[in-house]
Image (tube, rainbow, N blue to C red; front, side):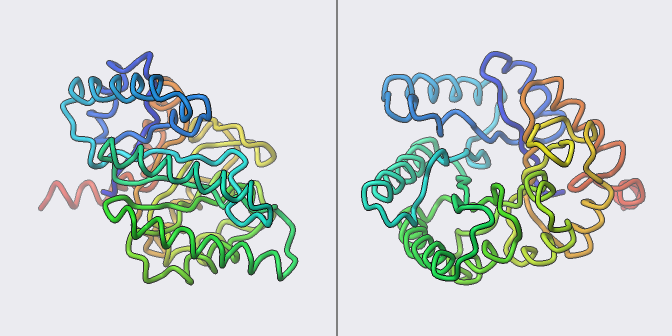
Length: 276
């Protein structure tokens, strides 16, 4: 089974560690994209120290854990050199944090204007991001870099970046399925187009109109379709259950296990595994 991830809650880590152990989950940290933490070395060290203690509590290594990198207002492709420079700084700060914590990977967002498809703008977005993240990937070879669709209207532009960077071994796509389902583009097209590049997946539920981060199964997304498409296109990727709080995470994992939603094993697969 591909690796599952949870967003840890620093205020409830004993239960979080227990849930992670039950389902074999790693953690994806969501603290380090917040500007006030990124700019306060003391606060950042305190957060890191907390998580190091919690890893000891969980009796787990950090090598499988990941984190969400800076994404708020990050615009690598900006024509404004001040904005572009500040964006690159935030990415580098994120990568340094991941390296210091010994994490497996970092998730970033596309940061492009949704729906704005002027050819020059799209080429600029692709080429500048490709050049910058190729440099970053080379500078941090021990960390994976996952580029996540935010409110992109279709998968073709992200696929173009991934194809341009296909030879960068530690770069891939993070498919946020809930974000994708807020577009007018069907799930099949998202997964079919991005399948060769998907290395990480974010899942949560919504009402097909707003990014609500509901527990999996608590909204209107068709999880049987998601499961079928991921398996049909032979995607092999880690999956973050991107919901906050123990209750919503437990609800999500129980729903996924009950219905055999990827990366959970289906009922027949479980029987086959037991037989062998």
